[in-house]
Length: 364
Ligand code: ADP
Ligand code: GN1
Ligand code: MG
Image (tube, rainbow, N blue to C red):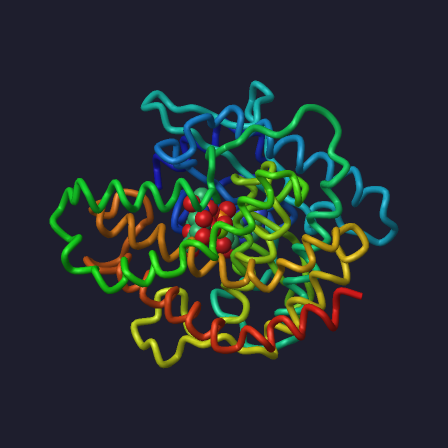
């Protein structure tokens, strides 16, 4: 707490810091809520950026600075909008930088804390799923005209499934902690589907679908809803960079349509709820439909299947590797996560015809 308080002193915050405590359920950064005493002053989010994973933090912060300013400019020109709540606001350091580096080499940033928000790890109503779809769709259209150079690629080849599969293969070969023989069923599940799952990447590589600016981490808890469960703000901008529309649509389908938890130990709870799929798709396409090409639209249902697959592959790889990437809460957590993702994919495979029919209905 004392340390955290010392870190906040490097930023141009208003008010007196009362407390700072761990906050949220992200798997990557260390996030704290900072509360101030004065009623009129903002509270803040303080984050230690995971620089083992994000190797170019100045580049990443340059992306976030540009994207948040662009969105603020749009909100300021929208009658009735509230730029401090509908967009993330970075708090500059005393020397007017977007991040502070401490003597140990850790990188820190601060945002205004968006009050009265709701964030959900599991979505339970079509209304919430619709709001998530609308918000991520709108986010993509708001940043489509970002001026200037292309954004930095904060994690190179982040959703490149060819490379993710190659990393899995190599990790099995090295088998650093002797776990490979325990997961042969899961590994077999992965190879059986590999050919289908490279489709979107290969269409992109051939130039048959366009590169856009995408969020790339559209987990449902990365959109904040307000106290009436209406869309408020898209957060977690570390991976905003060039990508395909399928990456944003797919990762949020993975997290907004699952009736169980991302890491549910009870696989019978993990199913795709087609009503949630329909609502999310309706919201997302309402905001993006007019800009998407026929080939992009045609491959949206496959994007739904791609994300439990690709994230499942990453959880499985991390398990075999000895848990070096995702934060874990117990010994076999990454395996439990991978199994839940593969169960979700199986449920999607069973309902794929219905998923295609839904996309057809809303693509116009
Ligand atoms: P991670 O990359 O580790 O997921 P996030 O940026 O998503 O980190 O932050 C973790 C959690 O902190 C979010 O899920 C959300 O609950 C909360 N959070 C992040 N930024 C804000 C903000 N500006 N206002 C309110 N809550 C926030
Ligand atoms: C991580 O940062 P967070 O917790 O929102 C990960 C995503 C995964 C997700 C799985 C930079 O997201 O790619 O889909 O965990 N982010 C990064 O829950 O690797
Ligand atoms: Mg997050």
